[in-house]
Length: 188
Image 1 (cartoon, rainbow, N blue to C red):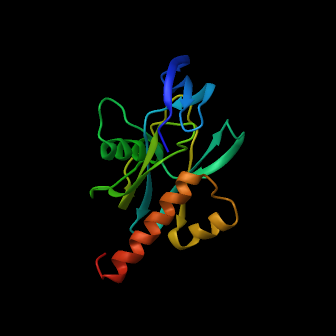
Image 2 (tube, rainbow, N blue to C red; image 1 turned 90 degrees about the vertical axis):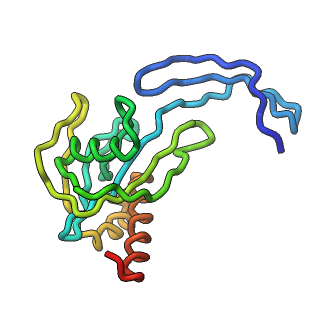
């Protein structure tokens, strides 16, 4: 199996939020040319499972126009001004929820969003001991409601389809496994 060979590359558009690229590719294994393979280019995203000392998970709910519905999610965003991923998620959590923590975010993993048509990853963190320190500081296009749900009840939201944003579900599962592992080792 060989990597596809890019014969031509052009952009249908470029925006601050992402680009749409069109590639003409040769699949040498099959001697086949794809004239227009579209790739969405985005910056990497960060998200975090945010837990309070009362074992509540901080969720947000907002309208998502692509799916034309309201969705529970965990706080998320992208880097700004040459931030590290850790700095970006701390800023995003503070802006979207008003919560912060004095402990460093715990890295849970990073995953390609959709490697068939997108070039970016989501980097997931767990933030423990979060406390509300201020009101939200939202971007112009954001309207976000904040919810605190007992961590033990979040899996029910997944099973009932109330929490259906994939990156949030993945991060929740990673955080749950991490917490089980450290509790088993007696380190919390």
